[in-house]
Amino acid sequence: MHARPPRAAALLVPLFVLPLLGLGACGGQDEVTMPPLTPEPGDSQFLDAPEPTASAASAKETLPARLALFKYLRGLAAGNAKVCAYLTPAYQREAFGGPAACRTGFAAARAKLRPQDIAALRGVTVPACEPGPGDGEYTVRFEDLAWKGEPARPGGPLAASFTLRKTGAYWQITV
Image 1 (cartoon, rainbow, N blue to C red):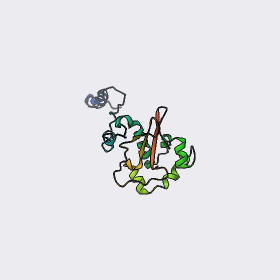
Image 2: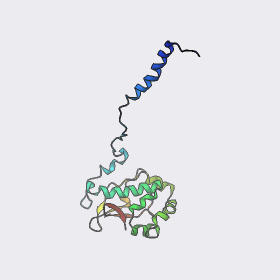
Image 3: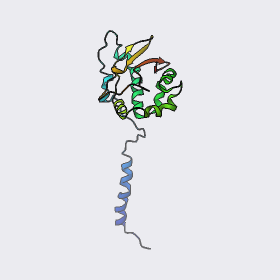
């Protein structure tokens, strides 16, 4: 057998030890943190809603209700059937044909929308709503939605007006 000269060992030891020392300098934290969530610049209309008129409700007060409608409309554009959770059985009956028909009829109803409607829904915002018709309810008329381009056409899952009601801890769309 050949014995390695001590000089070669002296060169190899640092090559193995230096990477191990570098691992210790990584901070020692196993926790992965995320930056705080901030609103998207394109969706600033939620924060910069117009001043309320005599019949309009305040932007801060209505934000949770408007956010529920916003998520429904954007989810409809994305093809996400989970947005059915934002609909009451009454709205599902009206828009999809049955009290729990959203999940089963979602794809078919979305397929009836024109490609331009789906594109428009990707840029829609809900800048304001009005109180009523009932106590604690808000209404958003289709023409009051803000569109980045051409608006979608109402019909099917897109009502001429949306009534929002708080059900438990959540806001839902009803008729």
